[in-house]
Structures are given as C-alpha cells and as structure tokens.
Amino acid sequence: MAQLLRIKQENVSRLERRNNIHLSTLKNYIHALGGKLHIIVELPNQEPIEIQDNETVEV
Picture 1 (tube, rainbow, N blue to C red):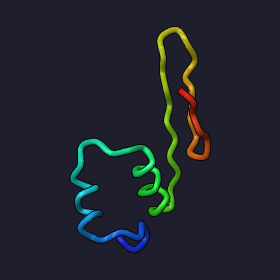
Picture 2 (cartoon, one colour; picture 1 turned 120 degrees about the vertical axis):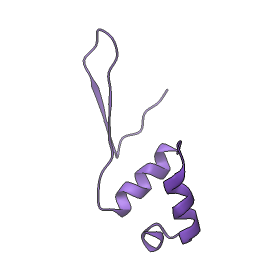
Picture 3 (tube, rainbow, N blue to C red; picture 1 turned 90 degrees about the vertical axis):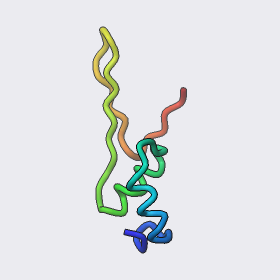
Picture 4 (tube, helix red, strand yellow; picture 1 turned 135 degrees about the horizontal axis):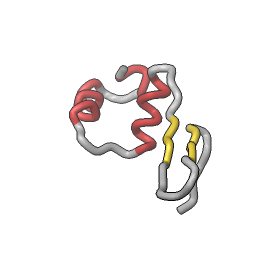
C-alpha cells in the first residue's frame, strides 16, 4: 500500500489507525486499491444526493 500511495509504510500504518481522515486522503487510499469513492447525502424531505469521486462540491 505504501508503494501505491507513494508514502512511507509508517504513514500508512498511522493512516489506518486514525479515526478521522480527510476525504481526499480516503479517496487516494481507495484509488490505490483500484476502487472509487461515492458519497450519498440524505437530507430530510429531499431526494438523496450522490457525490461521485470525480465531482467537486461547493459549500
């Protein structure tokens, strides 16, 4: 995993032990595994919104 992410193994271990990580870090980790990140936002009285991994969201 360290090679795929191009970081030191100790940083991979630190990442895997964390409770909170940045979405960009999670996205990179998932990409290194060959996956894609999708987030579904569910708000009251609205249809769910899916945010796909190549989209940017403005707040």
